[in-house]
Structure formats: C-alpha cells, structure tokens
Length: 303
Ligand code: SF4
Ligand code: SF4
Image (tube, rainbow, N blue to C red; front, side, top):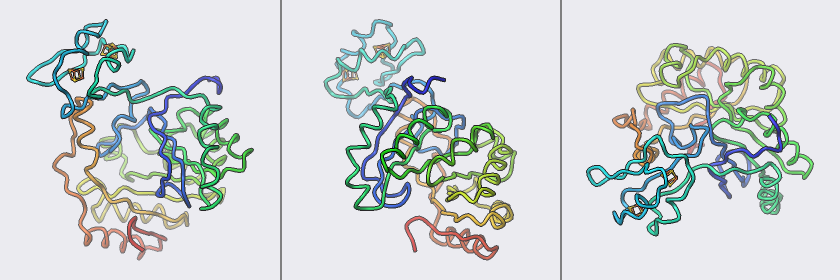
C-alpha cells in the first residue's frame, strides 16, 4: 500500500497522559482486525467512516432525511436510522444545525499528521512526552505507520505505538520496533475465549509479543480487566505463566462502561451492558496474584 495514500483517522487527542510518558498527542487510526466485546471505541472498529447519531441532540426537523441523495435515513419510533445504502458522503451533516449527525473517520496523509504533531513539540520537550499511535489497530497500515514513525524520528519526536499485536509476524517485527515504546494490549490467554470475545485467535498475538520481548525492545503490556471475561483465577494464572518469563512491565486497566452510549449512536448492541466495573478488592487480587508469580505489575490510577 502506498504510504503517501491517506489513512482514516477518527481522533487526534492532544494533552493525553495515559498513552506513554509525559504529555502525548495520540493519533487514533480507524479500523481494527479485532472486535472486542468490551471495546469502548466501537467507532474505531470499521475500516470505513461511520455516521454517528446523537438522539439527545436531534430536533426531528427532518432536514437530513430530505437532504440524503440515497434516501438512506429513516425515522422509526422517534429515532433516525441510517440504512446500509449510505455511502458516507457526509451531505446530511451539512443540513443538521443541531450537530446530531457526525462522521467518525477523516482521511489524513502522513505529511498532514506530521504537521499536526509538530504543533505540540514544545509540550513534548517540556514533559518528556511525544506521539502515540493508537486505534483501531495502527499496524493494519504498516507502510503508512512506518513513514509516520520515521518522520517523527527525523523531527526528534519520541514515539509509542499501541497495538493488539494481531499482525503478520514479519510486519510486526519490522514496524512495531520503529516506535520507541510498544504498548501491547493483551486481552486473554485462553484461545477459545479470545476468539469468542475479540473475533480472532490469539496464537499470532502471543508469538509476536514473545518475539518482541526477545529483542529487548521497550514494551509495556496492558491488560484490560473485564469482570466475567478475563478475571478468573485461571485467567490470571495463565497471564502470569506467560508474562513472568518475558520480564516486561504490565499495567492493569480496569474495565469501564464508558463506551455504552457510543454503541447506541452507531445503532449497535453493547453486549457487556450488564457487566459491572471491577471492585478495588478484585483488582487488588488480580494484581497480587500476578505480582506473586513474579510479574512487575501496576494498576492504572494507583501507585
Ligand atoms: S452520509 Fe450521505 S448517503 Fe449517508 S445518510 Fe448522510 S447524506 Fe445519506
Ligand atoms: S437534521 Fe439533525 S436535528 Fe434534524 S432530524 Fe436530522 S439529525 Fe435530527
């Protein structure tokens, strides 16, 4: 794929503090080969732009319905639905004065993104921060991401990449180490549960993480702690058995239901809507079990 071709980006977040050291500018790529049941950014999953509908802002004026050249918008029971015939032209957005319709995903070239991040150089220098590539899955666009990481390097900007590790091993080992730090999101060890909750098997993911650790490249493994999905004693022991020999630091990310509303905007069902957030006691137990097995583990939000 041509690295000069634009890539779909669904957000550029400035002043981020959780995606690596210091103050970060985090670039969110649109499109992911996984579809985790707990994903709090469902608009990141499709490789196409998405139309988001905010029912609480809608005044039901009908202007978007009349404006759509594809007749793709239909009102049912006081809610607007967008049909599969929508070609993401964005025409209806121009007619919605209430901003109840928005497009997730805008194409950027690598050169445009480099211009965006250069604006934040002063914050990176003062805080020891830099740029983080996130998603979606940035490694789904390996040549584009390589160009971006090398462009940052030329400008003296530190980089991190957040990845689920699901990429061809050759691509993974060629591109991921171009970032100064790899934030590796590890979801589940059990291959059957991994398939069930992410849509893909985890053999390649585990192989890639092991190979990267073997290169002694800076890695932080991040585990989302999702009650009822990956927090049983058996799950934790499987994480420990795999991670302890790797020696990479691990951060636990407590599950939050903050994405539930986004599923509604996309007219999608949120499968984990009844899943509670993990209690402090459960998180302490998860962390303690890993630490006891020799894993260097921290919990986001605590010391
Ligand atoms: S993006 Fe275009 S095709 Fe889709 S609903 Fe809006 S106007 Fe219709
Ligand atoms: S134009 Fe906006 S406010 Fe009017 S019906 Fe469409 S979404 Fe609702």
